[in-house]
Image 1 (cartoon, rainbow, N blue to C red):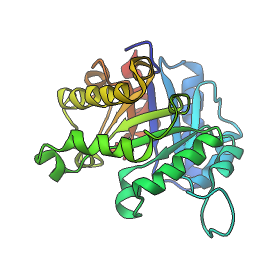
Image 2 (cartoon, rainbow, N blue to C red; image 1 turned 180 degrees about the vertical axis):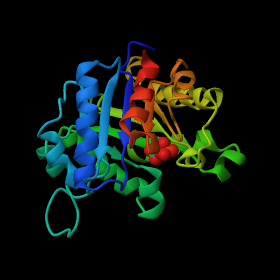
Image 3 (cartoon, rainbow, N blue to C red; image 1 turned 180 degrees about the horizontal axis):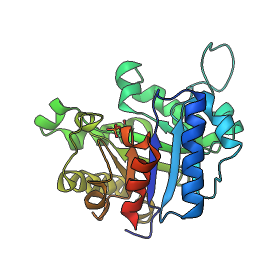
Image 4 (tube, rainbow, N blue to C red; image 1 turned 60 degrees about the horizontal axis):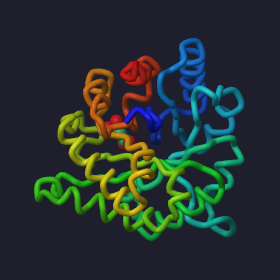
Length: 254
Ligand code: PEP
């Protein structure tokens, strides 16, 4: 396990204005530059924050990412932000397939497939989110759901391309609800996801793929989750909005 990259990534969602976002990024920058983390740290912020944060962020210590990008390369798509634009701010990552994008903005597997291709083509690393609803979990369909999400949007990639994909398993029933999957529940499906990656790309690629857990992850439950063999870190929503909370999760890798 500890051969692959350990990652703690924050997903700020639609929180914090520019000044607040800069203040949080500065605080994290100072803290983590002074005390180097034992994992890769990434903050994914609203588009409008990216360039300002990139201007001072020590990206040897904290990576920067967007929370979305367009499914088109450029042109007459009012209000959209392309992968190339994201990359040009100095960001290196993009979250794609978040359940809020799928659920509230109608992002289908086909749309996500295009977004993933454009992100990778523009040199971004993709944090690709998958995960089942409560209904699907209760019907014991979680494995089928996550496999279909992988097949629908990322298993078309070449093995070389897939190396720039980080998977985030986020059960929808655990996002922002305070209800975390147990470490055992999470490990079970992470192992399944890794086996699905192995089935498609072989064991070597599967062993190198980082699979993050997301859903009400916080400093108190991160150590137990991260100790599991197939959990390589976390994608953090609510607890990424305060430097001390986020640092508490990063410290789970100590
Ligand atoms: C998320 O939406 O990516 C997430 C993990 O949110 P939270 O930590 O708030 O549950």
